[in-house]
Image (cartoon, rainbow, N blue to C red; front, side, top):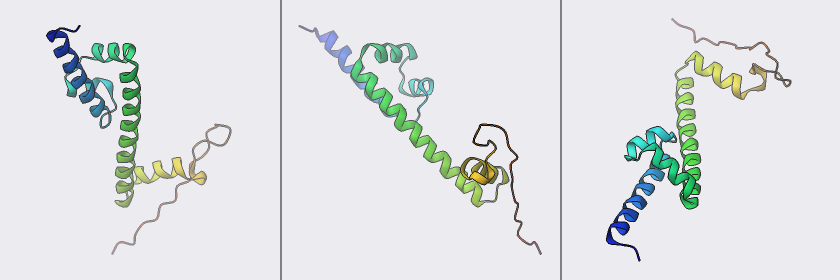
Length: 122
């Protein structure tokens, strides 16, 4: 039978695991999420290795966090494109449009074609 101390430790660890999993959903970087959750990285890795339920939850939360950051990044990139930021335009075209790709189908470097359209300034 578990002692009062063991029950207290189990409850605290359960709360810490939940807090860490929730943090992963917004920050999918183990070091930062551990710092924000006040859980040592060594503790995270121990739980990750020894607790299959926590392992699965952490993997899922990290994937969700990566998706969240990707969505956020893409929204920022689109905002920069709207502001006519050349670097953002070039990045988007070279990664999304086949006519502007920097690699051909064999993975060889190819020339990037960028056409600049400037507004007429008065």
